[in-house]
Every structure is written in C-alpha cells, then in structure tokens.
Image (cartoon, rainbow, N blue to C red; front, side):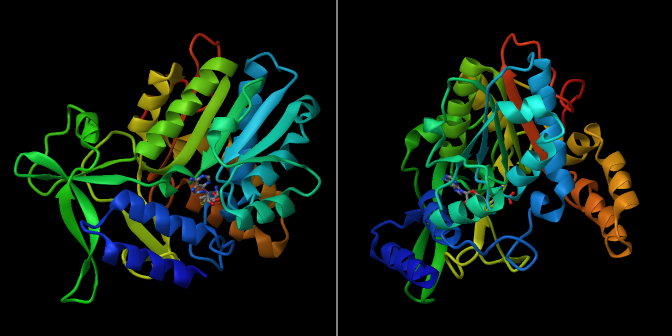
Length: 365
Ligand code: SAH
C-alpha cells in the first residue's frame, strides 16, 4: 500500500508544471507513512520517549496533576493528546493518575489522530478507557478545564522551505529530473507570498539560506492558544527543535533508526522537520494565551524528579531490568542524547495563578 502511495506521489510530481512544494510533499509522504501502524518502537523506524521508558509518561502525569491542583482541582478535566502514536504515553499517564483518585475521576480523554491504524493501536493500549477521537484540534470540547499534551506531534506537520536568492525569498520544491531519472529539489517563486512577511525581523539571510515556516504548526498552536485562553489549564508540547527561530534545512527522513534520503522510499520512512518553538509559542500568545520559556527536555524531566523515580524503580527491578533503567534515564535526559535537542514549551491562560513545574523559574534556552 505505501509503495503505491510513493509511486502515486512521484507521478503527481512528474505531471506538475512547476513541481510540488516541500509542504505538500511532506504532507503526502507522512500521510502514507502513518497509515501504517508499525513504525514505532525498538523494532520500527524510530523510538520515542514514551516508548523508551514509562518514566516519561509518569513525569508528564505529575506535571498535569500539579497544574490541575494549582488551579484548585476543578471537577472536570478535558485531557487531550495530539498524535498519540501507539498510545503508550496516555496509558502511562492514566496508570500514574491512579495515585490521585480525584484527578483520575475528573479525566475525560480525547485523542487527535488521523491514522485509522494508529487509532486501533491506541484503543488497544487504553483498554477499558474509552477516549473520544478527533481528526483535528478544532473539535476538542471547550466546556472544561483543559490539559492538552503532545510528544513528537508538531515535527510531523508540513513545513514550507523559503530560500533566500538574489534579494528575495523563493520556495524549495520537488521536481522530476528527466536526465537523472529521479526526484530532486529545485527552486520556484513563493506560491504563498504572505509567508515572506512572517520571517522574523532578526533573520538576516545570505544567498542560499533556508528559512522554514510551518503554517500548519502555527495554525494549530493558534487554535490551542485560543482554547486554553477560553478554558484555563495548559498546553504542553515536547519535540525536537530550536528555541529561537533561525535559518537551516532540518527536513529529515529516518528509516530503521538511521537517517535516510528525504526523496527516497517515499511513504515508507518517517519524514519530519525540527520544530520552531518560538513560532509555536508566539502563535499561542497572539491567540490570547500566556507563554512560558522554552526549556530542554533535561530540565523538564529533572524538575519533575525523574532521577529519584529511576532510583525507586531500580530498587524494585529484577536483576535483568536493573541495568536498563539508568540507560533509559540517560537517553531521555543527557544532553548528548535526547536531553538538549528535545525541548518543551507550554502555555496557560493569562491571569491564572499557575506556575507550571519546570517552566516557572527558568531562563529558557
Ligand atoms: N506521540 C507518539 C507518536 C509520535 S509520531 C510518541 O511519542 O510515540 C506522530 C503522531 O502524530 C502519529 O500518531 C501520527 O499518526 C500523528 N499525526 C501526524 N500528523 C497528524 C495530523 N495532521 N493530525 C493528527 N495526527 C497526526
């Protein structure tokens, strides 16, 4: 099925007069890829934090319960996860929530997921809990205090690549090279001219510089900003990316835990881009929310006590598991592993007296 999808995308590019924008290419390739439920985990193409260790979900559960407690323990919570993959993170959160019966009782679970196959995996992971699925964030209910979380969701959303050439922004696109008999990158005039005005003022490009803009990320962050401004609560996004907008080509493909050519095996490898956290937080702020500084995954997890939790798990572990726990902790928090490239950002409702753990007294990065 995915092979056919790849062939179909290539055929569309060959038939187009001026190529396919990077955004459309990414969207088509990602849709074909996520239609398959197998990509995640140690056996799949890549492994995400919740799949590495239960400690990740436990820390997010603590973070959520703390925001809820600071807000005066409202009786009803809309807890939503965006792009839940195999459902591991939400399953760990719900298991941890049993420690706080009032919190657990208040939860209503909503999942934003487009892939029918992954919805099936999520249903299986959540057992007797019956979530409500949504195709987009627009339909998340706004009738209750809301906690909206995501891990590696925004990196999967399409980006446009603006390329500075001869004093103007052009756009990177994918074309069919007849001589080479393969797909390759090319430049064309910017199809959505309004994007040029969205490049921040501190960017001073030289010829060939690439500036990435994800209209999809910005639009979703705006909707989630307006959501939290209306309901109270918090939105938390964890992903890999940069805290401050900068030039650079971050489009990447990963297959079987290795980087691969972006234009190869279309629809059969994970295609993503680094997240521009500043752009996300700015969009949420414009929609009325209060942003907190962007922090590293290391700071985030450490502020929630992941080291103490790892020690506790080691005490209870079998001899076989005992060696694995410190390795998992290292992978999640060490700057040389996922601790520094991965970052967290959150926003709350302006005026609410909430200081989210990890973000409240940080300088940011
Ligand atoms: N959060 C999971 C999975 C990350 S992969 C983890 O950490 O393991 C990205 C997830 O986002 C997948 O579940 C994918 O199907 C979903 N996704 C990608 N694009 C989406 C979109 N536009 N709308 C909703 N879900 C999307």
